[in-house]
Image 1: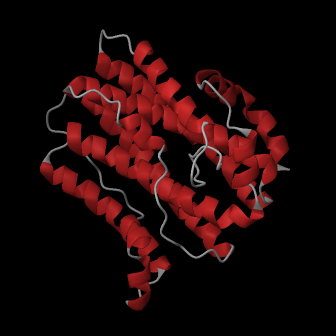
Image 2: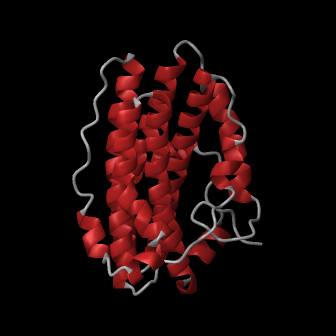
Length: 265
């Protein structure tokens, strides 16, 4: 059973549990694992996978690549964005999900003509992250189709915005803060996947177990990039500050249930 499979991942989960300042509240797990909320959980998870890829692409476009390469990134994301944001229109245009999925199997090869070492590392890690997040997007979409869950629009949680409003305005400081926040989000995602495994239908639970390794690596990649960009700056105070903000967002009551929300009051 999937819950037993978690025993093989304790070495991977321990650093994440030690990093985060709190566990996901039991009330959130109870609410998120309610069978009545499965469609909401998967729909928001689908949006989260796309947002993770979009955020990585935005970092590359903002700090690393030229305009031509930025356009390649946007074209790479476009079929996924179309599926989520224009799905109701596509139905009337007789364009199937299978056709859409087939358009985006080959990721573009992105290269830098001139760059700093941290830019090369950022490009390498963010391209890999985008590939994996978009693959996870396809997997969630397949599970939704198998469970006859119709894709619906959803509002964003306060979670990411609650941390992003505290980033610094300086070029380097702002990038370091964004990378720290990315690492925290990936760590929380990994922690929540593991927390939900014992409470979900087996097909979904096994899928969430399969995500743990990549999410844990994304967490490490973001923090290592933050250290590389920061240079001689000690990022620990900023990490602790954002972890404190994240703890409050996770533990305090929320108005809506989302994958990264607090428990609904």
